[in-house]
Amino acid sequence: MSQKRGRPAPKLNRACMLCGLVQSMSQFRNEGCPNCESVLHFADNDDLVRECTSPTFEGLVATHGDQGSWVARWLRIENFVPGLYAVRVLGKLPDDVRGDLQAQGIEYRPRDGSIQD
Ligand SMILES: [Zn+2]
Image (cartoon, rainbow, N blue to C red):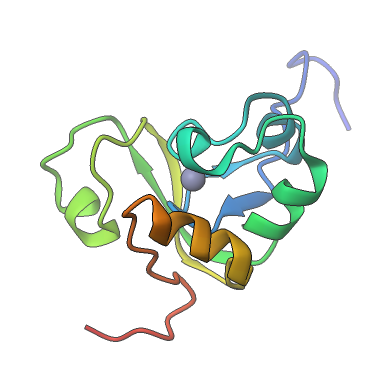
């Protein structure tokens, strides 16, 4: 392994179950999910990050903040931050978190492919 390229990029190894954003565990832990932090409050909550993000996901799509793009419509993301998104995320939010979201008027659509349009 060559070190010539300097610091390696943080390992993108978890996907947010609510919006599909892919980040490293430490990014979720330190900063929360930039899309969902206002409703999920990931930051500094290790357990919640583990429960609400998944290490198993597939189909990465990069977005650049072009909110009218087909990717945004496809992923059903509005006002999302540019970044990498997983098309499928395995796992579901815990019931209490889902109840929380419902109370805030947010419709949770599992991204594991169990819902067909
Ligand atoms: Zn999110």
